[in-house]
Image 1 (cartoon, rainbow, N blue to C red):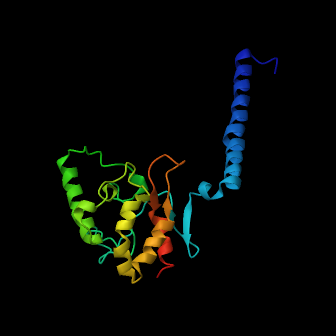
Image 2: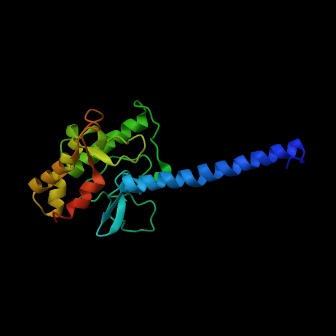
Length: 208
């Protein structure tokens, strides 16, 4: 190669470096990271999937709706109806679609947002059978991502009587189930205590 022109030798050196870095960064490094993740954090590395009766029903990291089946599946204009047998998540500006993750981008004084929150307050209060003034904020406002899997303990406990009545079980049993699913603040001081809706709804079957 010493007889080759300088320009060609430089190009060949660059090509060797490119191939070497491709193998290191594109093959060896991803395989090493994947191996460590699977060995040390298998559940999280696979997407924190939640299974029920051997079937994947969702991810504990992503919110989803718990609605009744549509009366007419082909009618796109039919409004969704929340299932009273399940705990409901907080609203989602993107209808819980991971491809449409995001907030409404409406300001706190936007007339449309104010009207939406007022309607949600009325609907949630009527659905759960509570005083509209006692409906928690997270039952009225969507999260920044629209995919928040958690609700506040206040919203979870608010739904206890409705879920118990719909399932024909005691409110005390449902209340205790919620209490077992309360997660405290992250690292002891970040955020607020919360309840994962999917995990909670999965365990409701044990009460029925």
